[in-house]
Length: 392
Ligand SMILES: Cc1cc2nc3c(=O)[nH]c(=O)nc-3n(C[C@H](O)[C@H](O)[C@H](O)COP(=O)(O)OP(=O)(O)OC[C@H]3O[C@@H](n4cnc5c(N)ncnc54)[C@H](O)[C@@H]3O)c2cc1C
View 1 (spheres, protein in one colour):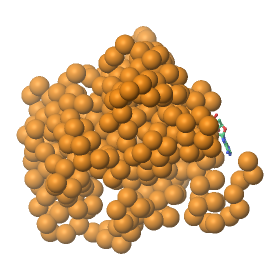
View 2 (cartoon, rainbow, N blue to C red):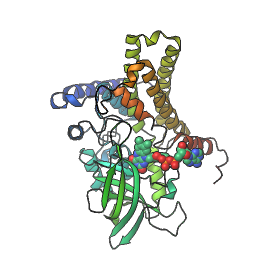
View 3 (cartoon, rainbow, N blue to C red):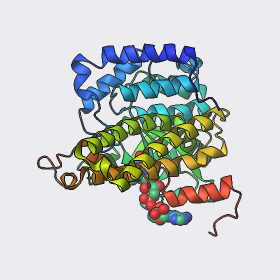
View 4 (tube, rainbow, N blue to C red):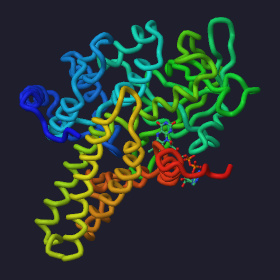
């Protein structure tokens, strides 16, 4: 495990810190610290302009191979980037699904033509992507996807409903898991299609969440179309590609979020020092536990990534999601307990919440999305520990 940074990494740290200091100013000053979980509507256009600025200076896809336009930076340098980005109060990234999920999937499973057509839009910060997996009857049981795609000449025609689609209201494109062979076995009749969102036949209905924001939406496909060249992998290979995307979701992209957890934790410490909560012996234990939990996450992430080979992550990766999700949900509760009674009061109407109040509400979903805690336990039992499969 390489948990220390080299001299070269520290030189890179100065470069990125300096760049952020210089550019997160002027017109971009107001977006510092905005747009995180539960705050997705905040200053969206400004944050999209920021995404383009990152792209213009080559700060998107920094871990991607040079042949496809990335910087091919080492894992430790990617960690350094996320650390400095969080330290500088870098805003929630509008392009994170494209950069963290779809881009690596296309690099790994896509054709050369798809790489040439799709990756530049992500690298420039222009194209925004969303993930069309879940449906009303296909969440944990993802292979139950019922959205259908039928070939019509050189196109797929798509009908069905997705739900909980994060960022759909802003997205240009969606990667959609569709059933293309209804006769085939559950996991085998699926295909992974890239579908333009701005077309007749795609209807987006935002869902209001308890933060007051609509980070996710229902998406209805009524005869929506996409070219057959937008199939990633062969028709029928959708399950394999979709699982590949989920592996990327557990990979480098989780490092970024740990660094923003650090900022949230420091805010909680600051309040506890100020309002006297830190003098309470039980609260002190909880604060110390939270600090330790964050260190464990960081070292496990570094251990995981240094043991990975290409897209294949080692078994340690399987504990990452349940650990961070549970830790972050508990941090939300801790933050409210440290705040005490003021945690129950909004500054104004409606939903004029503080960052910590939003965090508390949003973190209730951490143990659900990207595989619920129960599903994570099944994954660990079956795939990491080799226990008998759950009875179906
Ligand atoms: C904030 C947020 C953002 C999301 N963004 C997206 C997105 O962008 N794109 C997308 O496609 N989806 C997205 N989702 C959906 C998410 O992936 C699903 O909510 C998740 O997979 C769970 O599915 P479900 O909601 O249908 O619950 P269900 O699968 O119906 O589960 C209900 C309960 O039963 C438990 N359960 C289910 N099966 C088992 C089992 N075999 N063993 C033990 N317990 C079980 C679950 O753990 C859960 O507690 C998002 C969800 C949230 C909350």
